[in-house]
Image (tube, rainbow over all chains, first blue to last red):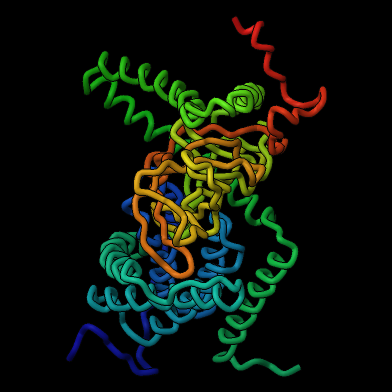
Length: 174
Length: 298
């Protein structure tokens, strides 16, 4: 049996992970804080999108589409408010990512690092695609669909995301 | 009332959330508002942590440099660097006007006008949470007299302009941002071209016709025509020229060190720097101070 993607039947119980009280809020705040500090003190880490990684992780863990999309919306709006982009650009994209991630998490067992690596890269690409679509359609700003930098960023975020997820797994309630 | 099946509830919620945010975007674009409550609350909430983080990192850096590295040498270097920065600002403003005898009156008036412009030092405490936009946050805000569209500079050159102001913080759009721009000109020929950001570390000199003389190494300075940046502040140096249609592609390396922005200066004035008349057509009493007559200068 391929244990990278474990497809469960409808009757099989999908494990939903819970976290200690305040974990989601603290981790989200820390991710936003670090993301705001990167450009000034650690410019080389500016390629990371920590709020997106946090959204994907909690959406995959909670496996509830409603919770996933609401969490994505809040994280996205907070990220918008700390950027120069209008409120709603990252809000919409992370809402959709939260929904899709939690829907996939409800159907697949995504604990394997290879599965996580592939999913993070995929979600990063999808997230960027949605952001570009919003810029082009709603804001009338020409943005390239794909650049080499984005490809490298997807790979870096996927790799760092796998390591970050291993750390965040320690915060689960046992 | 029709009950929504549970399997569709999340889809309905998703649609509702996305539509709500599309409406939010539409309202912001229509009314051109940037100071919405969410933005104010978030910046106000996170800025103390950014200040604390900047303070901690500075403390660690200072501890290393002053106690574990060569202590005295580092202190002396810091004093010299501070003096050097101050002199650079003055020298940069004067150097661009040297060798132009018929513009001496305008140059002296400009130096006097700049001495009267109030300035405020500020520290960069954070950046954008979006890695595609080039904005930073300063630890000065409305309470310090900062307003939108004020220019931000360093002794090395132009940094950007204020685009949002909160009580104790303000947001600066860096010159390297794709949506940023400055009225500029070549320091030697005084021909004016706009300069825009590219989203990367380089700037672009725009709308340069193919037959206009532009050379590698040419200095680019502010023209003052945008009414935001005073004239003759360093913008950058031309590092690449490519022919194009209908205009050349001219790349400019910024004068300010955007990789190491820590302390900046905000020009605390919205008064426009009105284009100056030639000395022969000098305006009446309310203009800038006139030059003293030649006899008085000896």
